[in-house]
Image: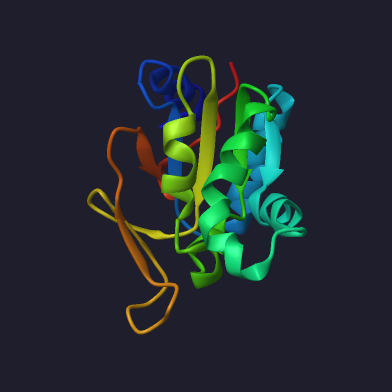
Length: 156
């Protein structure tokens, strides 16, 4: 599907978090370059999170991360692209996961595109391997989601 069509379709959702699932860094870079040219703001989630927690005591990070992200999002603009969000699968972040961290905040005027580094199996995003502590399976509900390999860029 064309990225512009996906963005258009995403606007009709209650939760406007277009979730693109897959692991192809060069394709992600192409899409990000295109989105930047259309005035989307791109954020590296790992950089944001590490900055947000730098003054938070280690034993309070799990309790605080959701609220810290919510506060940050209020000032992040209305058209945002979120990349490199795997840190949110870690135990230190209470395994909140990128989808859950951002989905509920993409309402009203806010639109988000989340590049989710995972495997897509039907409507399930699967991150890591079952024997690892960061393993996660998440049903993608209430949002438009698509496999990275199915996204195209077609200029008007």
